[in-house]
Length: 78
Image (cartoon, rainbow, N blue to C red; front, side, top):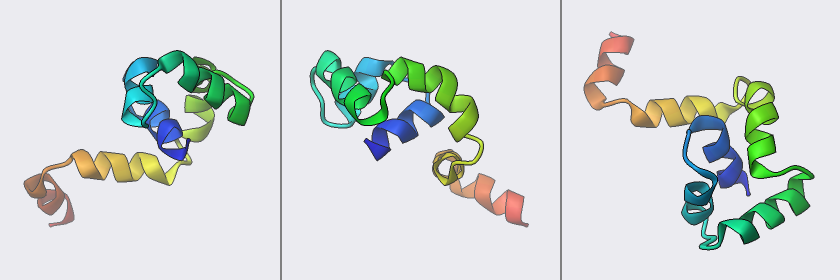
């Protein structure tokens, strides 16, 4: 579920895509499991949680760094 939260915080992927990326081929089952663990649906988490969690999340920084190319990383640090 940590990976699901990361994807919900840092991407605009559909809930079905997040479910699939985290090993749940059935997005409805994923949503039920997510709600059982977090007391809110994945879309509810994204709607309210993104503002609360993503700015403080170390995963947001790591995800943005992963998306940079080698030359972009070097030009920023130079």
